[in-house]
Amino acid sequence: MQELLADALSLVRLGGPVVVVLFAMSVVALAVAVFKAVQIRALTRGARMADTAMECWARGEVDAARTALLGTRAPTLQVLADGMRWLSEGKEPEQVREELVRRAQRTLADASGLLGVLEQVAYLAPLLGLLGTVLGIIDVFQGLAVQGADADAGSLAGGIWEALLTTAVGLCVAIPFAMTHSLLENQVEQLRQRMEDSLTRLFTVSLYRAA
Image (cartoon, one colour):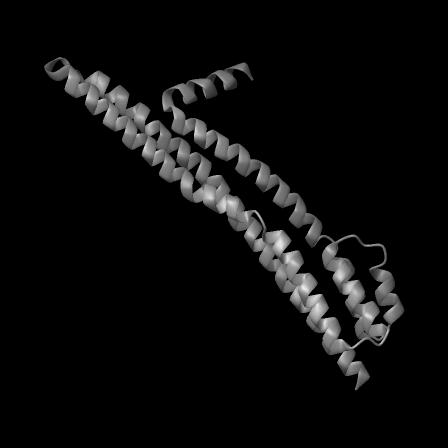
């Protein structure tokens, strides 16, 4: 643990302020990623309950369908449960549809919220790393200009590798968070498709039974 901390401090010392900013960005992005993963998992939980409820609803077993969703806390399932309750009470289907769509959109907005933070970190981290490299190389050549004929290849190589360090750190920050953003965004899209499918089945089945 101490060696890891020493390596991190050495990396910060060599990379300078740019590496400090990149580390801060990675901490924020990691916190956002964990929070969104837990939130989206909670929203997607209960897909089997929704399928069971919809099978009962399709057979006209309204009480069984509502019982299958009884006590659920998942917002996605609560939308479905309220829709079944309102339709079984004879509420106007069009009004019920509008309210369920509104609540579904709000749920999806909550699910996709803060994902932009991960996207921006994945986009900006390589650019910040490149900026650090450019500034480092400028500093190296300024030193060479001062040394003039006394400059040696060793100092040049040492300065360049230290300058390139920030680019490597930027890429190490960007790559995992780009993958995380893509994964979470895909889960939100799957959630959207499941909610659309459930709401469509809810109304098409009820209309068919009424006919």
